[in-house]
Structure formats: structure tokens, C-alpha cells
Image (cartoon, rainbow, N blue to C red):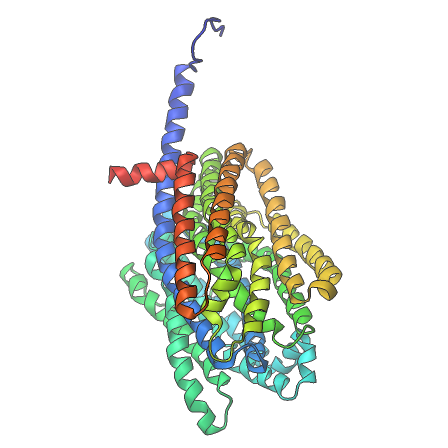
Length: 546
């Protein structure tokens, strides 16, 4: 076809124009649906993170950052290493991909039979792992934190709490499976409240027992360990009524020949291998942290808890909301729409995590001081935790990006590249920590964590681009430039307020922090809207229509 060379705008052929409009319409609907679902998750996650911070405040006030807290962190970390393998990582992504297909293409009876089969098989396997973990708890603690043996009683305390908290692995695995079912059915708010129940149960039961168990001759910190089990049970309890209303009835069976179970197994085994690399990184970092000055394990834990607030609120929320949509588009092999959904998910995550990282870097010390500096948590603890928080914040956007990109690979039945990316991260992590630990001490571990996340995300995003025939990467990059510019301006304004409102005291510090954050949020929102970010325009348009 020959086009007339006359001045005026280029008009595409009618068919192409119609396809373009249809694709833009689908993109706008997907963005709005994604934002609505992510918003629902974010509200629930917000409550969870607030309760999580209260839990950490309680721990900081009661136990500070000394021997008891170091022991608690390592003991809880041991079952949590396996938690990502059998619960929130490999299992969720693999199960949702298969359950979505069953829910759309199979009968109701076949779908619920699959759920019962997976639930029973998971319970048996994880229970065996829990028994093994309790049996070899002493060896696990010595492997994870060998230098704890240099402080009298620290190794034994860590081992005892590991025995208490290991069953949490089974509870959180079942909770994660229930969450995957409800998310696929379109329910996001209640499942996301499960972690709020965990934090609430941990606080109420844990604090109560922390004051009671010393009367019976046990360390107070063991009361908090028992509280984690109460929190794990409550995670399951809040989801069961909604699941029953969807028609689920518990009919345990184990059929290892079931095609759905086998497919989940094929997806989950490589994913476990890939995620095991992440757990190796955590093991390496904990091992190195135990060699740093007393309190380093706790400083890193408190800092990571703070950085998890925006990760959960934005990165995890968008990932949970996008997963059923991505799984459906992958099943239909609709790669164009899948690419648009991915680009929108990444842009929304970056639009929230880049300014959050900027704010955490600028406000690290006042945030840590206000949240944790009470009771046994000293000014030195505040400074050291804030230093770790700054280095963790560098990788915040990459952490959210990985949370979004990896489930896309699982939805496409490709677990090879997430595995490769994870093991590349292990090598990079080991190199960075080894080279910088003597200079930066515990800060080196936070810096290495951020660096490996950035490398992992860039690798996976590049491979995924080629795998699905491309996605609007230019749109994502332009959006990132706009977001970064708006975040930089916001950061300067926040720093200026902190520098010019002088004085000390809890109330003045809280007021200064509140004003800084408020000005930061308002200025960033105004700037990002003025920069005409596409995802923001779509969301605002839908809000106006309502």
C-alpha cells in the first residue's frame, strides 16, 4: 500500500487502528483491575506491616539487640529458610498456575479433589521435614551461627527456640496454599489479612507468655517463640470460613499418580532448587553476621523488617494481584496482553518503591529511632540499624521487580531461568560480602543483598523480554526516569525539612518525621501526576468514572 506524502498526521490502516484501540482498552482495564486488586491487598498488608512493626517494637523494648534477640532471630530464621521453599515462594506460584487451569477447564469435583490431594501430600511431606528439623536442631544452629558458641548459653537458647518454632513451617505452608486458592477465586483482602493475624497472635500470646514463663524457670524470649505458633494457627483460621463458602470440603487423599499433582511437582522441584539458592544466601549472610560485633544479627533483622514494609505493601501486593491474571494470560498464550500486564505491574511497583527507597535513605535514622529506640534499644542500636536500612533500601525496587517477574516464568512453565538467576546471585553475594565485610561489617551484608537483587532482576527481565517476544520496555524505562526525577526532588524536600526543624524529644521527632513524610508524599504525588505517568492516568480516570 502506498501512502500519499502530504502534511498532516499519519493515520494507520483501519484494522491496525482498531487493534491498537482494543489493545489500549484491554491495557487500561487490566491496569485498573490490577490496581484495584493490588489496592485491596495493600490495605490488608498495611495492617499486617503495622502490626509487624508493633511486634518488632515489643521485641526491641523487651530484649533490645543483645544475646536473646540474636538467638530469637536465628532460631526463627531456620524454619523461615524452608518457608520460602514450601510456602510463599515455590508452592504458591506452582499451585496457582495449575489450580487456575483446573478452575477454568475442569469440573468442580476435579478441582476440589486436586486441592485435597495437594493439601494432604503437603502436610505429610512438611511434617516429616519438621520432625527432622527438630531432631537435628543442634547441628542446624551450629551450622547457621557457629560463633554463638563463644557466648555462654547463647547456642543452647537458640537451639531450644528452634525446636519450639519449627512447626511454624507446617502452619505457614497450609496458610499459603489456602491463600493461593482464594486469590485465584478473586479474593485478596481476607487472605492478605492472614499475616495480620499472625502478628496479632504473636504479640498477644507471645507477650503474655514472656511475662509468665520466667516464673517457671524459662527465659522470657521463649514465650515469644511460642507466640509465633499461635500466630501461625490464626493465619489458617481466618481463611477457612471463606474457603468453605467457596464449596471446599476437607476430604484428605493422597494420589501420587494424579496429573495435576505431578505437574505441580514438576514446577515446584526446579523452583525449590532455585529458591534454595536464595536460602543459601540467607545462610551465608547469617553466618557472616554472627562473626560481626554482638547485636549485628538483630540490627540487620530490625532494618530488614522496616524495608519489608514497602516491599510487602507494594511489591508483594502487586505480585499477588497480578499472579492470577498472568497465569490466565499465559494459559491462553496471549503474550501481547501478558507483556502489557507485566509492564504495568513493574511500573506501578517502581512508582511506589523508588520513592519509598529514597525516603528510607533520607529518613533512616529518625524512622529507626522513633520506631525502636525504647526500653533496652539504645542510641547505638538506632545508628547501626539505620546504617543497615540505608543499604537495604538500595535494592528495594529490584526486590519488588523480582517478586513480579519470577511468577511469570512459573506461569509459562519455565523454572530454569529463575534457578540460574538465583545461583548467579549466590556467587555475587559471596564475593561482595567477602570483599567488604572487614570494612563495612554488618553493612556489607545489607549492601550485598541489594546488589544481588539488582543483578537477579536485570537478568530475569532481559530473559523474559526475549521469551515472550518483547514487552513495552521503553515505556517502563521512560516511566522509571520520571519516577526517579520526582523521587529525587521529593528526597531533597524531605531532607530540607529534617535539617531545618531542630530540637529533640519524642514528640518533636515524631512531628518532624510526620511533616517530612507528608510533604514527601504530597510533592511526589503532584510531580508524578504532572509527569503524566500512564498507569497513574488510568487509575485516576477510573476513580473519576466511579
